[in-house]
Image (cartoon, rainbow, N blue to C red; front, side, top):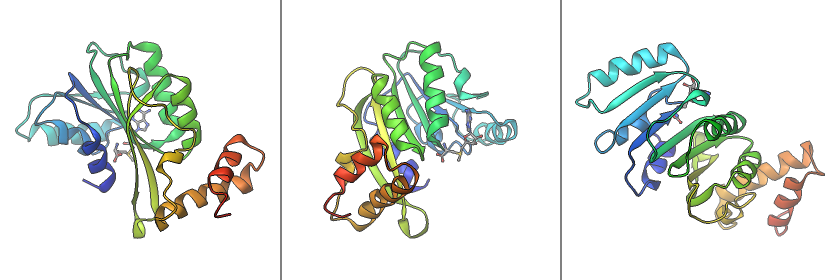
Length: 209
Ligand SMILES: C[S@@+](CC[C@H](N)C(=O)[O-])C[C@H]1O[C@@H](n2cnc3c(N)ncnc32)[C@H](O)[C@@H]1O
């Protein structure tokens, strides 16, 4: 299990009726919950699900289910779910959450999220749709630990507000962290210097830029 999946797993601090590992691919995140919870594995690629089924059937566990479909199409019969969405683009993650919110009562469910890119749009969507923070973390992985990933453990019930650009995660004394925020700032400076998000990053990083 890589650093991102390990950190996501360690954020979770309560039991659930069902763990839903959407966009599961290898299923490593869902598998880590099998000793304690029922797990639903979901991916839209049939060959991935075929391999995962074989792999799970050879494990000592029987408390799992697999569904080959777009995560957008999931409908739950359980109420207290932990919905995990990791390793996909921010816009796809928004599309999945938008669709799940329309089709399901998720008021008692929690969420474990790790989007790639479009982090500002993800944060705005989460705020506008009533998500609250249980815990949040930033990690650095990949070559020389240079790739920053923002990880979210969220509820629709109670928790803290989600900050627009994760200013609470900014640590100017940590070089990797500083470089992560500066890279977003430089990208926005080129792409959309008049945008709200650029102005927010500019304010946050004013001592550095
Ligand atoms: C990079 S893997 C992520 C695996 C794992 N969640 C992780 O974070 O390591 C992305 C997986 O998401 C699946 N995927 C992408 N969009 C999806 C969607 N809308 N519904 C279901 N699966 C999706 C892809 O088929 C692929 O297997």
